[in-house]
Amino acid sequence: MSLGRQLIQNVLTSWLGYALRILIGFVFVPFITAALGSERYGIWVIAFQIIGYFTLFDLGLERAVVKFVAHLAARKDFSAVTRVFSTAASLYFALGACVLITSWLFGLLAFDVFKAPLAVIQEGRGAFYLLGVLLAIRLWISPWTTTIVGLQRSDIISALDIGEEVLRVSLLVVVLSLGGSLTWLAAAVLGAGLLRLVGTVLWLRLRHKEITVRRSDIDPATRRDLFQYAGISLAINFAWLVVFGTDMALLGLLASSAAAGLYAPAANLMLYLRNAVNAAGTPLAPAVASLESRNLGNAVQDAYLNGIKYVSFGAVFLASGVILYAAPFVRLWLPPEFGDTARVMAILAVGSAAFLPQIVGNAVLFGMEKHKYLLAALACEAVIKLTLSLVLIGTYGAEGMAAATAAAQVVTCLTVYPYVMSRVLSVSFSRLLLTQIKSGLLAALVTIPVAVAVSRLMPPHRWPGLFADIFIVTVVTATVGFVVVLESSDRRRILDVITHRNRSGDSSK
Image 1 (spheres, rainbow, N blue to C red):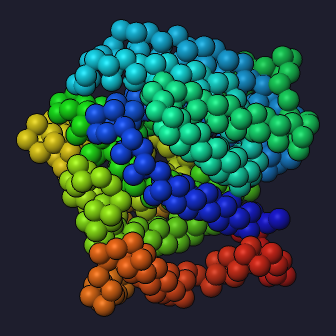
Image 2 (tube, helix red, strand yellow):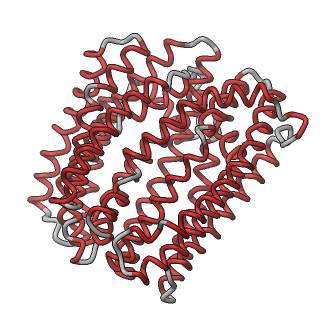
């Protein structure tokens, strides 16, 4: 299969997975918020966010392994792939052990700093311990996962993720129905995660028997190369945690766990949107590395320009829909105590419209091994967000956190990020910015009038009306995007993948 068609297949498979997650979340979030209440749900999401900080123990190696495997696999050098795989496995064994110890110490000594009743804190601590175990095991299995992605088979990882999501939510529903504690909820998450990791190991073992852990292939030179690439990736991961992984923790410290609970559903919706775009970014990074190994620099530039055009259109469409339908959606979706979540959701959507297109640039920078430029942009965003958060949370709570996040994204994503990409790809700053703005403006000119007109004809006071409105707006906007925004070559590739046909004109671009 050609690189272009495999990339599209990976993206479409990932989008299918995220569509399923959104559907599951749509049904499950009202259930868990009603079952736990804002305080217990707030501690639940805080536990997940804090354990997310321990992903820094990855040290940036995940992206390094993907990059090296993609580069070497493009040359059919599987002996070198095995060397990278074995060396990474030896490193991750130690890193997973560090996560086990550190997460246990944090739960024991520091988890009670959050503002919540003591009984809720104790439940959250037990859940945190189990989540730490799962993260440690994920790190031990990370070489298998990253190697599959580097082999251009993100669709396999997406399929495994879908299975894990369905099993996890099913187990959580059972535990909540039985009145289980937060600790039992975490045990359900652990069980589903372990089965998914077993599937990852089995797939790589069965499909690529030549790639296996060998002590003789653990190579000091390869270790140095991995860490050289990973050093900047680690700093980027830290900056991302500041930008995306501090919201609930800051609210728990400066406001209350209830404020974090109000913020979480809106933040999770933005996470779904971010992950949907990451579905293109994740397979794009190894694809760019493969193109770079074959000296196809112009193809990288074209991929980026088309990518920001497409994602800008989709991002503004999604953000416009969230802003217009947030109030009726939250009113129908969540218990009355979560009414303020609608305003948080609308504010965050503004920032997402500016941020989502930059995910394409992130993937290109990692694939080209130019990710040091991304670090500078993220540092600017992190400083702006933290400063505004400290100023706004005390007065405005969850809405202040949302405003700080959105403002930081709009400022940096319309200035710093385009400047960085213009320097790396030798494309003018004005061309990049105009590509993003023109595509986004077209999406707004289509989405907003259609949504307003449809809402007047069918007011979204009940679920059928809301679903009908969203369906009509989505079909109209998607049609315009497919016909007007997509390049003809990409339209053909998408149709080929959907219909399982191999056109003679398909290229390896």
